[in-house]
Image (cartoon, rainbow, N blue to C red):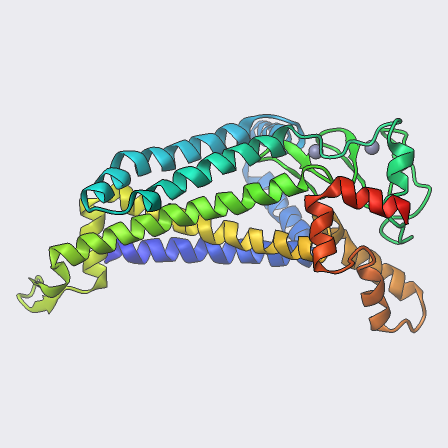
Length: 343
Ligand SMILES: [Zn+2]
Ligand SMILES: [Zn+2]
């Protein structure tokens, strides 16, 4: 019973923590919280340790490095090793369909292919050669993306929707975000690969979770354990309930139950992030625009005396031209750019 309560408690803490981080990020209170937290830690932790932590964080999040790629591959390797050595074998013994059991491997292969593509494809680096051509692709809204702005680092004119990535030290066309997991920016040319990578990663975690759950349910069903009773410390007889069943499964298949907890949590976290990315794709917004959008439009609208709130709604989505057109822009970026430049 203790194990299940702890697992549920940890899951709830991670999910609530993730949701709270998203809300804080959206409402810009995360910066204030981080600043307050840093101040408290500066009194507790010695200065040399603080410097070491800061340089480690700087290396991890502000320089291009392979740490998260290696971590990503290690985690995937661990999940699939456990799946292959235990779950797959047990499920074959229980006559599970082979197609069903091979689905997580198929998703893994597709996922690794799109992981590589997201990582190695140029996201849309702006250079002297393509600067003029990219300037014509998107309309300037004069609020989030004003006309005739130069990047102080690259000394190039910034096309609408572009941003200078401090980690990669380059301006990226239709900049979305810098992803540490693929060690690359996500921009106009690799957003489609990133979307499929995220989709297959979520699907593979969910597929492993479903196979593991079905296996454990089948084990319980075959053992008739749920029909039996047990005697507690006081000598009272009880029908076996879900808590006892989970405890029994954890003691019999500890690695599988642990793996199941991990992939279920991962499926929810990745699923939530995937929904957010799909929402942005469907409404033709980048993560950078979503983050900067509200503040810029709020400042703009507050400068326009008596501006009705509906006005900001009209301006906010100037790049959205319907669901299929928005998705086409991500999946067929070259064709979409050609169309926009022609009109
Ligand atoms: Zn730049
Ligand atoms: Zn970058």
